[in-house]
Image (cartoon, rainbow, N blue to C red; front, side, top):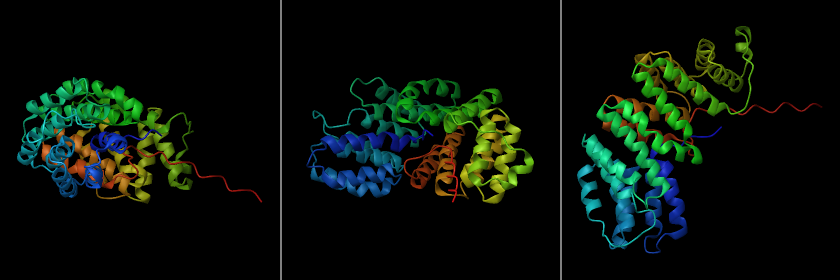
Length: 341
């Protein structure tokens, strides 16, 4: 399976990698710990470290830019703007290009100013020196800003700006998941269905699974039942998929993302209210990774409902729950066959 990273850590992971190679010595461990906390979905924990890093190197824009980003994601837009405007100019620091506009764009999102936010994110996409991580983050936030603006058609079009980057670093499934939800919200069930089939294809990879008959479902373990559900989606047999994932959820709530799949199946069948209801139940039960995925999809749903603060809250909860940077439906590995004596 190709895991899909979510919008904050995908780019910040790249930033950390760059910082590890060329990080100014004056920034030091406080900067690194701050960015790590930010990437983990804890902006309030990041702020003291990044404040310390800024104090240690007041003439260096790198730490201050990340501090502005932390304040923006912590939904303190006024402080974020003041901090970003205070970043010294005239020095080039690793990964700085683009990140100031991302911080200002997120601050505009929190202020319910999606047009201003979109302008900042587009500026990153057209900047010559912005690194790929910043471009991808800006592209994803641009999509969210357009959803908040009430322009889902343009939001879908904007996803092409970052989908090519996504294919190179494992976030392609994210784009497909978002598109499935957006199309469902627009009432375009056939397009949502097509998107979900593509999601199942990405998750399953080349693996082929024969769908079991109903009589065999109780005998299947969780891994094989999940594989059967994903295979049914891939084969466009959504009624079978619903049956498999419902049986899985009945065993253990939201096991192997069962409720998330059930929510996506509702989306693919044009039932938006049921999609939301199932995502809401999915954030309450199941393993951390399953709840993380549900929260991240709910953040997109909140953008569609013009609820920016709720969007960011679900986003951050999803970040904190993620395991090993993964935020895509799980495809369990088959259990090894027992050795014969």
